[in-house]
Amino acid sequence: MYDEEKPFKKILTPLQAKLKAESFCAYQERSQQEIRDKLYSWGLHEADVENVICELISDNFLSEERFAMAYASGKFKLKGWGKQKIKQGLKFKKVSPVLIKQALAAIEYDAYSEKLMEILKKKDSLLKEKDPYIRKNKLLQYALGKGYESAEILSLLKEM
Image 1 (spheres, rainbow, N blue to C red):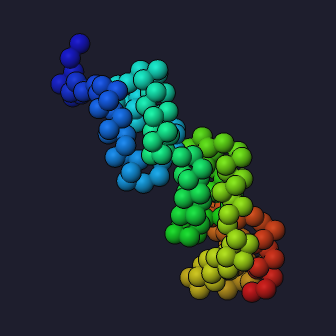
Image 2 (cartoon, rainbow, N blue to C red):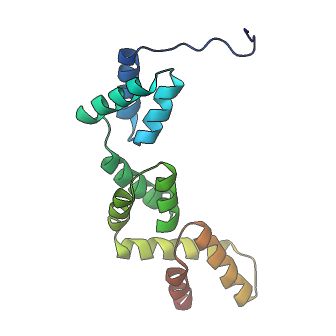
């Protein structure tokens, strides 16, 4: 039955969907799962979806490895995320464990420690708490929320 709230959804042909997906991929790196979800939302059937994805991969519009590297690099450099949060984000995007490991290995240890120290110092300057124990605990919780490992956080908190 026709519902006035929801207009009829336009269903694309596989060729139209491929062209639209190419521009979707050209805009920024995408995971296969993002493309798969988008193709289903455009009304394609499973066989057509898989064919379009294969064509996008062969035309080099879609690469899980490139996506994993770009995602890890971007979230680390721009958002200051730690490896744990990046790993969870990549798992959510259904990236293979091998590529997740590869993307996390691309983050240099020195840059990682520097970024964590920068985050801790910035947060420390914003805290109004006087008690050093509570202050350190708040910094620990904040950094854990950003996805950094507790051992790494604690070693840097000792230096502060």
